[in-house]
Image 1 (cartoon, helix red, strand yellow):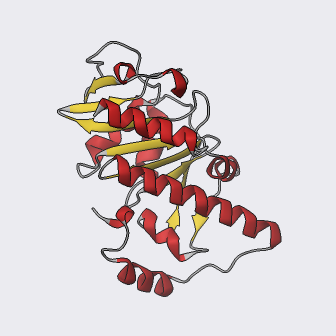
Image 2 (cartoon, helix red, strand yellow; image 1 turned 90 degrees about the horizontal axis):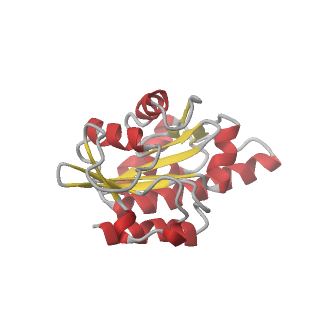
Amino acid sequence: MRAELLAIAQQLAALGLNKGTSGNVSVRYEDGFLITPSGMDVVEMQTSSMVMMSMDGTPQSTGKPSSEWRFHRDIYQAKPHVGAVVHTHSMFATTLACLQKDIPAFHYMIAMAGGDSIPCAPYALFGTQALSDTAIAALKGRKACLLANHGMIAIGKDLKQALAITQEVETLCEQYWRALQIGQPYILSQQEMAEVFEQFKGYGSWNQS
């Protein structure tokens, strides 16, 4: 599991979704979770760098966990079906997060995040319980959210699904950003999105619970 977590962290960097020491990833494991370390460039990470955490926030192995361990822990506690959490500072998601914009249903693929929008959580200082609280609220009924002036979070039943949702959210953010350069995109209605959700049942790796 440590090797799989490291591989996902490396893949996020290779895809340009995280750079340097930005972002973090975790996976539910045994009675707690494994999380990437704090302040370490992905090129320096090894399987032994992954930090085991208990659900009370206590490290169970050597190393310092990501400063964002609180929202990882709280997501696992609030959502028993979630097996992995990805946090990135990817370019387009972060750009829109710095504008504190929700992403509306400008494209039907918004549905893959679980609703008719991708909400942007209010700003809170990184690494704090306040940030975790805002993230948990924004993720209600959702598989992804933006964090104001910060980045994005994506969740999934496993690392593969969480990565797929991360990639799709970043693509949607880029498309929305580009559309806004020309004008105001048409927003799909609730009825139109309801039809999308019906069509999406059982479709796509990111749509499987």
